[in-house]
Length: 424
Ligand code: SF4
Image 1 (cartoon, rainbow, N blue to C red):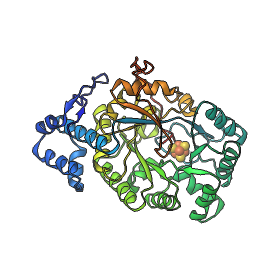
Image 2: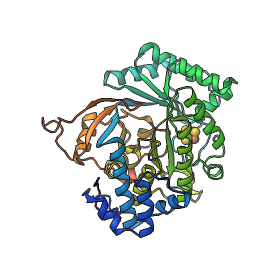
Image 3: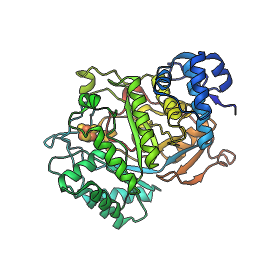
Image 4: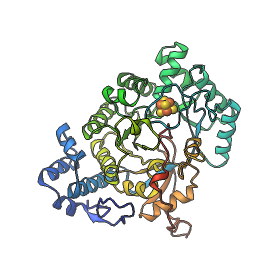
């Protein structure tokens, strides 16, 4: 099947999104790269070395990678671009962990440190419900004196007030912390959270799943083996999760490949990942950039490369690749949605993290605005649940005049939100 993609993977943030044919893109790339991509198209697995060759693709090779990723996306999930109406509730910014890439965590004595009460968390969830949200995403920092049952209490309080709300909450780092605090076995702790209404887990705290790199990013964070154990156990209990990767800092393309292949191997055992979310490193105000030797985040080509690579390497395993508009802004997100990604993530509704960082993005984007952006690249918007059940498609919206493409809000790169635990 012939597919189209953005015309060139150039560096300009205002590059048009114009279609070219997959066959043309494959015709112009290097024969070795073409051979690897043909293998991927035919469903054959690609080796580590072949994956690495794709991970460093440039110019015509990158165009071909993007084209094939776009084609595989269409084969797998069609032309719909999905999104979920949700709200982020970051219940505290107090955190002892001290990740070098984080601009969100605060010490308990900081003037802007906060901890939301259960009543306030429930109030925010209720407000989200009134505005059509089907999901609340709940994560926070790790205060030293946190009660390990606080996560359970959050779930209980929300479910009592709003039983139908899907609660997507608590990264593997938070789960590990709750287990340590309560001294409960991991499986029992997760079962307790599930019984209290935990619907799914954000696959954050993954960063790069390599202990050598994690030592540089955050020596206090859970090691790879523990992250994998928590995810596998959650999946075994019927608690799905997302999967994420933070790129654009000290890691190399080989680390992307190892990371994505590890996620694929977990998925082949559990089928518990709902999606993969590449998270570009935002370098401003981070120790990792100022003192840790990190790159200043990814350039446009690298964003496209990572999203396209993920689609190709996860083909047949994880069906959804999500863009993080909070980090990339809308124009680049739309480009990535033509480079293998198929999900626009959530509408979010106010995000304390982003406001604290002074970001343009990370606040509420009305679903209508999401749909307008999706229509602007010729795709079909569809609202989904957290677990990708389609609630509504909007095929007739343009015909009825409600979804006519409008002016896009573009993300000024210097105003991006710093890294934090987002809604993934
Ligand atoms: S990324 Fe999360 S765990 Fe790390 S310092 Fe920030 S809030 Fe704490």
